Length: 177
Image 1 (cartoon, rainbow, N blue to C red):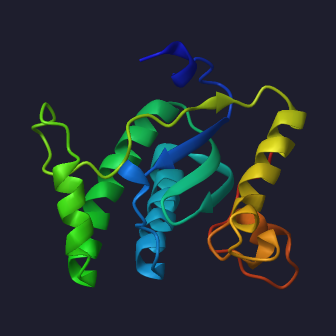
Image 2 (cartoon, one colour; image 1 turned 180 degrees about the vertical axis):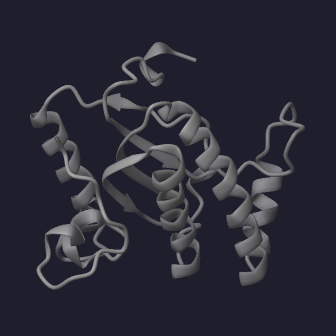
């Protein structure tokens, strides 16, 4: 693994991206997105994860996260959500996606039957408040740039809801210190 894809500054928050293999559209239902939200909430409660910003799109998610062992938290998060998403896809009749994940699993990965997430998360350390603001703007505007909504706060699965008065966020964020 190249050093630019490692968490070399564990005391800092990182901008991470988790992408579905072959950019397949998995997060097209509330039930599947809720698996991600619930898993992030679990990691916050049990693994010391801090969530500063996030967005879920149809085939990937972006977040600014911090944890005492962020690399391990991300590994556990991906393993757990992959299993849960396969179960949900089975319930939803998404058998064609499950077959793709079976086909796309590298042959040397014998511990699992499917490959749902791409390897790595391309972590980028948040070295300044300016970088944090840039990354937050990028991730919140991602649904707008893709033509899915007119404004960031219109996308349900995003921390952009944090700033709307009277709106209940799907997942509460931790303040940026």
